Amino acid sequence: MGELTIGAFARASRLSPKALRLYDELGLLTPARVDGTTGYRYYVEAQLPRARLVAWLRRVGMPLARIGEVCDLYETDPPAAGLVIGAYWARVETETAARRDLVTFLVDQLSGKPAGKGVDEMSDMRMRYAAGTDRGMVRPVNQDTAYAGARLLAVADGFGADGARASGAAVEALVALEESVRGADVLNGPADAVDRVNRGNRVNRGNREGSSGDSGTTLTAMLWTGSRLALVHVGDTRAYLLRGGEVSRITDDHTLVQSMIDAGGLSAEEATSHPQRALLLRALDGSADHARPDLRLHDVVPGDRYLLCSDGLFTVVGPDDIRHVLRTAAEPADAVSELIALALAAGGPDNVACAVADAVMDGAAEPVMV
Image 1: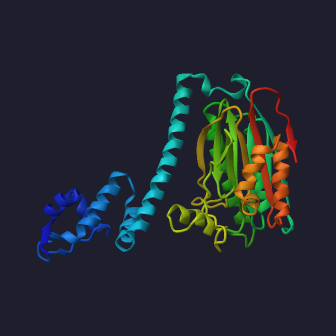
Image 2: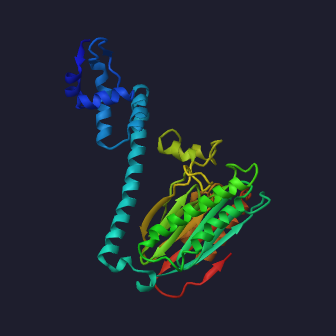
């Protein structure tokens, strides 16, 4: 098989000579031969499939580091490489939708449209809500925290020796925003609060001998403004939405097994029994690298029912049972009680926390703690 000059290979692969030189330096696409005297690069036709794959992946915006992983996988297992590409694009679409919501919200804010005003200036839509936690049947203490209010729904799942304090502090920081945050601050407020909580965990971790890295909390919360809510999420607490009779999960777990599912290396069924299913990739544990939350806007419509819960619920109560309760419980307080009862009936191996809110058009929202 004859060699191709860098120019000929560039034309055949639809990559520029400049790009080929860069990919060589990065180890992404190494020439078949480099002339020892002139330094000129030569390639062979067998390298064209990898080069063309690189070109296509660059067109869809995949980072170079990820492209190298996909190309290496492609050479040994093309179907698996296809699954990784699909998982990457699914994540891009999710993040793009979140950014689109943010842009729409900011445009409304800057143009003075009413959708950007506070909840008290909007329609008659209100929230009916309830929250509850239980220690469970095994754990000696309850490190879960749940809160439900007229504008805020929050669940945090603490872990480690100081987990109860961490989860309580996370929710408390958001409760402080419930009455004060309006308009565009609905985006900045939760993000700033999460950052403060994480910095507090960092200080606390440093002040406690032998506690480095062992304590922190997950957090999932919703803060309403008008007909939209800001969703802040880090870790493996979850948010579900019941709309039009259909239940969907609107958060992604920040766990090792979820990343493996996204990459196509693990099925959802296999994840339930994986030995590292509880390993978190993100949490408010005082680490700057692990605390980055997902922050997005979500439109609310009358009739929506939202559930926030800790993993003490969904790891032992099946999705069909969760859907049934959300569809049939008359009031949020009923849903919270029934879901916690199901977790306890399943053995209650962990703390469990639930918060449920219904978007309604009439009637005052009264807090109910279960």
